[in-house]
Image 1 (cartoon, one colour):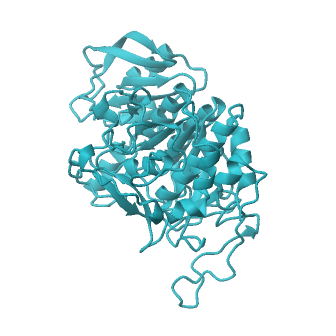
Image 2: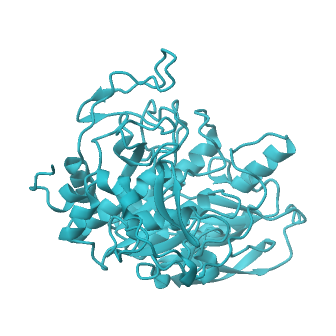
Image 3: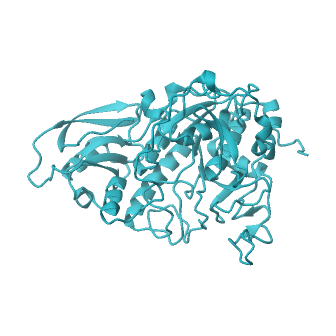
Length: 476
């Protein structure tokens, strides 16, 4: 993992243009008398007026007692570090936010701001490819049968020209089911907000999550273990989830911008941006993060990327009121990035095709649904050293990313908007259930709004890999 050292207020002396991104190099100088430089340097995502050039952006950060890590001029969003406790106030609390500072404040107040553990997770043991079991476990992949993945692969397994960016906790580069698909040249770690292509920066270190997601998308069709939806496409590991399970906004922005820079056709985001849980109550700081994410998503979509995201496992209604892509606080619950315009938001179902109890939902937010499993019947996929079942919308989303990758392979001329539209058109509609009493206590556990072909539980319906590549065929 790339770790930022202590940042000192400096004078910008050089700006290096790196493939459309501006990484700013600074030389330390005597701090301004009014700047406090003895504290811990914290990272901030910072927003500027659109069209702000790199020099002006760097000067604004320096004037606020900070140092620029990277600036994305395409969206006028940057990442800065500062040891000054009042950096956000100096820069503007409506334009700067630090997830690190928010977590530290919560810890000081003995309040947990997330459901994740604070302690760093133990390191994953290195994978010995020869020790990974070779038995065929495709018979356990009920999820692939639900979306007719095997029949779709007979038409196309996906093209190596299509790259899926797995924005997650890193992918195990030694897993034999993934080595063919994984492209190290397109992989990067984004934990500091700036892309780092060192193998250690994008590999799985403490969590099997990203490796599991990757297997669902593109595990090899080799008669061993499991097979992904689109085994012929390539994967890029874009690490945005850190070793404690956090996804800071600057990491998410970096991941989206890296995918856009490398012209990845699809990204999968099986996370929501920290430090908030889905409390359904957001302040001005949420607006800063939302604006940065809106800009990054819009830019990546414009460059041709389809962004797929999990609806989260919070079991909340994500329908905002009002729904808009402005930095104003929302009155409803919102997940970033799933709740944003141009993002394909995915809910989760079990084998019964009923919305999983944990899956969030919302009319006008959920686009499609996919298998994510429920207790006792989760989704089997790759993990370091072998295979394991996991449940969640995190497992549902990569099925959709794989289907979009197949569709992009079959229709290489489609734009991101055309792919999103076609995805909805080829989905298999699922009507709202007449009764959603999962506990049997006589009370509805959630309410499904909408109609049979588009509703808050399932969006346009279950993704169908076969219909996506051969829409005229009739699926039994």
